[in-house]
Each structure stands twice: as structure tokens, then as C-alpha cells.
Length: 194
Image (cartoon, rainbow, N blue to C red; front, side, top):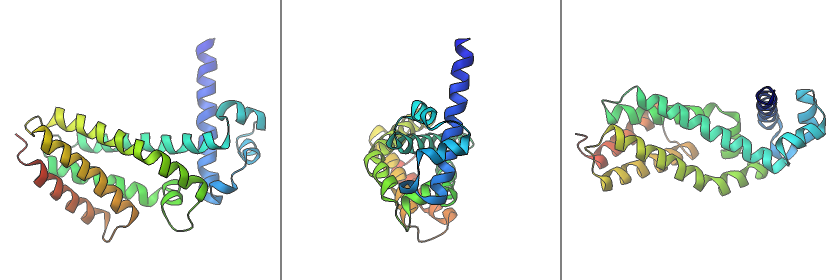
């Protein structure tokens, strides 16, 4: 019975976050109201507070969920090219840039009409997101391409993450071309992979 309750709570939380995502994409985080979220999911406002806590907790949960989804997508792209560092990086970067361009929540956080409510999650949580991304990428590269020396690997991973973030904020070309350029930089920094 406990597992059933946990499953229901998990599903409810996901539905609430899905609804919050849609409302934020449509109206912005500053205009998000817990009562709107309750109506969208068909639960009481108290249920929303019980499941998610405060509005700030909703913003943090949305940000964290998008980071996790992005990391999973990156890993899947890297796995498709375990034999070619340049191709793996290009696929992962292109995925990230395309996701950021199409994702209304990321767009709300990073582009024009800056939603100051969500911007604080980006600025306070972005360093943690960079650390998470760099740590995961470093571990992946160390396992997949052990021939890259640790110093070069660290520089290559940091360059990949920071350059990708820079292109999310202000790209001057297509995601494909940005990905190709970033992959070229990373491959040159990393040096031989075997």
C-alpha cells in the first residue's frame, strides 16, 4: 500500500510540474499562481502546497527537472558515438542548443522579456548546473576515452560546457554549425583519444 501511495504522489508531482511548465511558458513565472496550478490539475490549492511547497520550490523543481532531462539527452547522444569524440561532442552540443531553442521554459529564463522570477533560479542554480554538467561529462569522457590525459580532459570538458552555454545565450550561427565549431575546439584541446 505504501508503494501505491508513493506512485500516486510521484504522478501527482509530475502532473503539477507539467502544468506549472505550461503556465510559466504561457504567462511567465512572476504571474504563476498556485491557485491556477491547482485548477489546471484539478486538485485543491492546499494539495499543491503539500506536494510542492512554495512558489519558489516550484521554480527550483522546474529548473532541476529541465537540467536532469537535458543531461539524460546529452548522455544518449554521447552514447551514439563512443568511438568518435568529435562526433559525440557535436551531437551532444547540437541536442543542447536545439533543446534550448525549442524549450519554452528555458527560453523564458534566457531570452528577451526576462522573467525576473525565473532568472533568479538560473543565476543561483546555474553554477550548480555547470558543476553537475562538467562532473558528468568528465566522468563520461574519462571512462569512454581513457587515453586523454586528465589535464586536457578537464580543459576540454570545461570548454564544451561553457561554450555551449555561451551559444545558448547568444548564438551567431545555426545549432549545427555551433556544434561543429565547439566539437572542433574540444577535439583539439583533448588531443589524441587513444
